Image 1 (cartoon, helix red, strand yellow):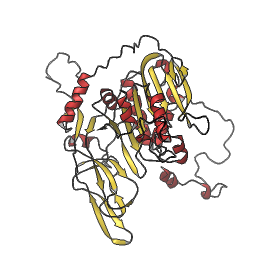
Image 2 (cartoon, helix red, strand yellow):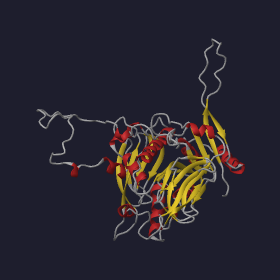
Image 3 (cartoon, rainbow, N blue to C red):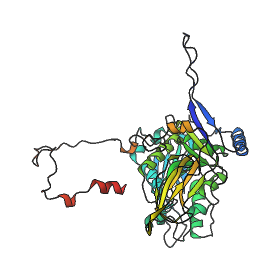
Image 4 (spheres, rainbow, N blue to C red):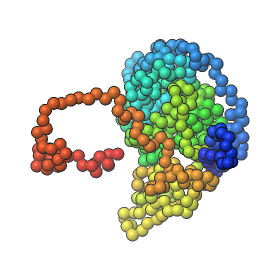
Amino acid sequence: MGKLSAKVEGVSVSDGGDKKSSKPRSKKSRKMKVSNQIPAKRRREIERALDAHDPSRPEWDRMSGAKQHRFFGKRIKPGSIRQIEFPLLDVNLGDAWPTPVTIIHGHRPGPTITITGGVHGDEMVGQVAASLLSQKVFTGPGRPLDPELMAGTVRLAPVLNPPGLTRQMRYFPDGRDLNREFPGSESGSTTSRVAFRILHELISGSDFLIDLHTAAKGRDNLPQVRADLAHPASNRIARAFGIEVILDSKGPKGSMRRSSVDLGIGTLTYEGGGANLADHEAVQIAVHGILNVLRSLHVIPGNASRPKFRLLASGSTWVRADEGGLVDLFVGRGSFVDEGETIGRIVDPQQPSESADIISPARGIFICTANNPIVTPGTPVGHLLPVSKGVRLIRKGLDKKTNRLIISGSKGEPIWREEYEVEEIMIEGEWSGGAVDAEWQAGWSNSNKQMVEAAEEEDAD
């Protein structure tokens, strides 16, 4: 199965001291309890990198006024917002694939954070989350991203693959994966040229990068963060994101994450949900995490929230089908399972009396599960994060009904759905269509045939 390793961090409260003492006791800060299974060599590498890091940035004098921010030849005044069309190709003929970039430039100096979505055209979560952050419910006076209250700059680029979005396809028209083409080339393939332009025009002027993704088609990801934890700036924002699962990874060769870290930019990849779905929970957690990072960097006011525990992983394993047919999975993203537990069953409609069980090879949490029921031998049905320590702590974070991990930021009403500047309209007159609380009458003109069934709405989700 390869190397499997993880560590769990949790919160413990220190002893309150002598109850008989009448002396006032100072409030003690919470301590992180660590159960570390990351290999010793990698752990030392991370510790050395963090010890050598100097986070001071004297040019971020928060008491002084910010200077104008420049992007793609345009100037953005301090305390203002501007949307700029950024062409992904430098052409005189044909489609340059322009995409909107919203610049929120704070009134005071601070870091520049770029937030990207839609690197893969069929991944909607990042595109929705980054678009929401551009709206007045976030950027209006007194709201979280009010530029008058900000110290620093936020760049929002929700759609980095416009042709893929239009066609609901993962790749660019030349069949290439943008997230395997970085750092790109000015004279390479179409996708390679786009990667070069994004890296040098959009990302290179940033201090931090948050790249939003979902699972590929046929899979569903538990909301999680991926970052190179030996890179101090990336380590910082990965923890600041404030959710439970962090995967320590440099990123695949050719990925945006790997190339931006090579430029010294603190980078994380957020994964949540599946392709072609605007997963509500994954969007909400993405926004929650982004605001946490901005608070941690003191770009916006407020304190970042922390999860009750943190699971750091440096190894995982794919659980695969050994038979072909249709799979009935008993688990979903975030499910906690024990070694030897039956997690699914494969049946073959051509041999309906036969079946084969799928067994979990280890105790752990599924950070990804398949949602396509058709399997052949070797088809991955789940991505398992093995856990050998901190089990009691993790169990406390599970939903009691589903036995799935509850991710921080998934509960509560999303900020963009709160009542904000709601105007009331008074309509005078008498109610003439029957009592306002009366049941719908089937004999009325728009009867059952035109009604939307609740089941259809549920299926659409």
